[in-house]
Image (cartoon, helix red, strand yellow):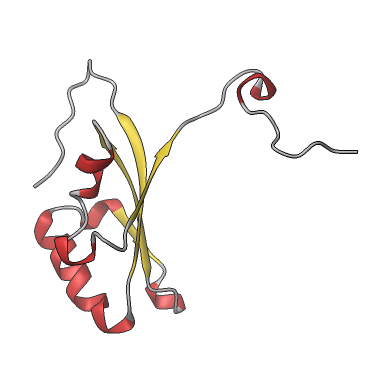
Amino acid sequence: MALVTHPNIKMDRYLIETPHTDQDCHMLVDQIYAMGYLYNFEWGCPDGVHCGWAIIEADNRAQALLAVPSLLRNRARVIKLCKFTGDVASVHQPTIELA
């Protein structure tokens, strides 16, 4: 299952993080390949960090989460991304006042 985008429709972008164990690694990669998302993911496994990351365009978090096999969805994180342009200070206020 692949997400289909229309050129005139702007979809949100999500970072998907899929932490997994060394034992789950081969199974996860095989399932993501079978689902058609292998090209989207980058992996830390060869460096001992068993986690995959992908940036997916989707209508919402639930749809983005569909890129993760169901057995590991409860461990995945889905983070909505944005880009700051222009005056970042007007968009992002610091949470701690500096003395």
